[in-house]
Image 1: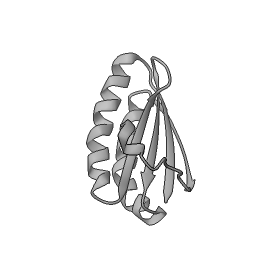
Image 2: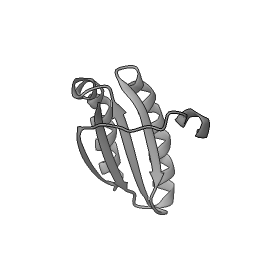
Image 3: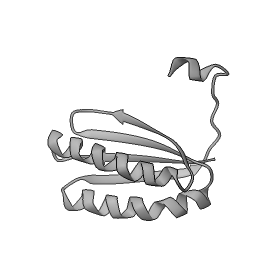
Image 4: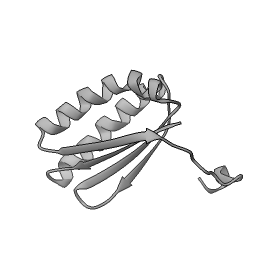
Length: 100
């Protein structure tokens, strides 16, 4: 599994709402090429954190094209986007689905 952690520092709350909507669209497209799950964390009024769970690095590379376009749009709108990623192991409670 390959994990990608993305932080977005938005210029204001309105931009944050717009970014969240745009990300939903991109996430749907990425799920068609290997994105398994995404967790969104509202860090503060203007900051977001996304944790994206990919099947593998090669799947991420396929889905990255959509993200690069969106990241560029974010930057043009005044957001600061940073991301890190790497191979990961995820531990999940056996009955994890019961808590969703």
